[in-house]
Length: 193
Length: 337
Image 1 (tube, rainbow over the protein chains, first blue to last red):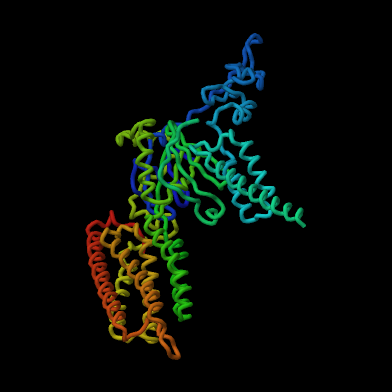
Image 2: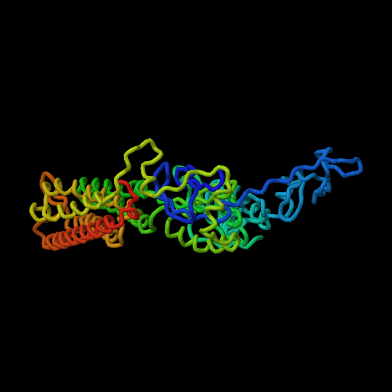
C-alpha cells in the first residue's frame, strides 16, 4: 500500500491523496466517497532495527544468527535474540519460534484470531435432533457431553452469555425424558403381553 | 478479557457469501476496534488499533438488487393470484404478496445501504456490520473520539508538509465533477442526474387517475392499468434505490415513499376487496371487483385523489430540487442519469 493514499470502499482502487476528511468521487468507478482520514495516514512506517554484527568472541550472540550481537533474551524460552529476531508483543520480547506457540497457551487473548462457539454447536445439534427425532437418543448424550465438557471453555472474545448451553442442555434432558417414557411404556407393554 | 462495547450495526458480506456466513458485528475495545465475523459456529476476529487507523471510507450502495429481489416477485405473485381469480387465487396472492411487500418495506425503512472500509498501513478491510448509512454514522460518532484521542487531530496547515514526505506521492485531488468519467477511457463526462426517473414515477401516477375515471372497471381497465401499475412499481424501486442522490430532498424522498405506500395499499386493497366481494361471473373475470358496488366508487375516488396529490407534490419537490441543483451545480453533481 503506497503512502498517503486511500482505497475506494467499493472497487478498492487507490485514490489521490486526500486533503483531510472530505467528500470525493472514486477516480475509477465514479462512486461518491465520504473519506475520513487520520494522522496515521501520513505517519512514516517505523523500520526495524538492523542486526549488529558481533565484534569480539566475548560478546553474546543471537541463537539464530551467531554472527549478530544478542540484545535481549526470549521471554518464554530464554534464547538470546538479536534485534532482527526480537518480536515485541504485549510488552514481552519473544523469539520467532515461541511467537506462534504463545498465541493459544500464553494466556493472552490479544492475538487470537478465531474461536469456536461450542454453545452454538450444542444448541444447533439439540435443535436439529428435534427434527431428526430418531437421532435424538444419541445426540442428546452428545449435547450433554458438550455442555459439561465445554462449559468452562472461553466462548467469544466479546460478551456472550451461556444461555445457549442452558437451552441445549434443557432440550437434551427433555429428549432423554421422552425417550425414557417411551422405553418404559414399551417395556411395560411387553411385560403385560 | 478485554472489555468491549457493542457498536450499532449488524450485517453480512455482500453477494452470495451472505448466504454462507452469519452476521458480523463491530465492538469497541480500550485501544482497538474489533470486527467479529461469524459463520454461526466459529467467530473470526480482526483488530484495528486506534493508533494505526489511517482512514475510514464510506460509499453508498444501491438497494436496487435487494428491492428488485423482493419487489418484483411480490408484484408477480399478486398478478398471478389475481389472474387465477376466485377466493383461492386471492388467498395465495395475499399470502405471497404481503410478506414480500413487508420485507421490502422493512428493507427500505432501514435506510440507505453503504459500504464502509477501514484502512491501516498494513491492511484494508470492509466492515460488514456497517452496511447501513445511519448505523455507520452512529457508530462513527463513537469511534472517532477514540481515534482522535489516540492520534490527535489533523491540522489542515500541516497536511501539505505531511504530503510532501511520502516518496510515492500521487496527483493532487481533483474536484468531484471533474472526477466523474475520468481515468476510465471515457472522455465525455457523465450527465448529472436531473430527476428523470422521478418524473416518470409522478407522470405514471397522474396517468393512472384518468384511466380509472375514464374506463369502467373490468377486463379492459385491467389491461390498461397493469402496465401503469408495473411501471409505477419499477419507478418506485429505482427511485428508492437513488435516494442517496443529491436530488433527494426530504420532500422528494417523502413523495417517493408515499408513492411506494400508495401502490402497496392499492394492490393490497384490491386483493382484500376482491376477496370480500367475490369474483364476477362471465367469460373473463373482472379483476377489480363489482363496478356497481358503492365501496368500489369510494375506493376509486380515494386512490385517484391520492394519485394526484402524490404526483403534484412529487413534481413540486422535483422542481425545488432541480432549482437547488442549478444554483449549486458543483455541490449537487453526483449521480449519473
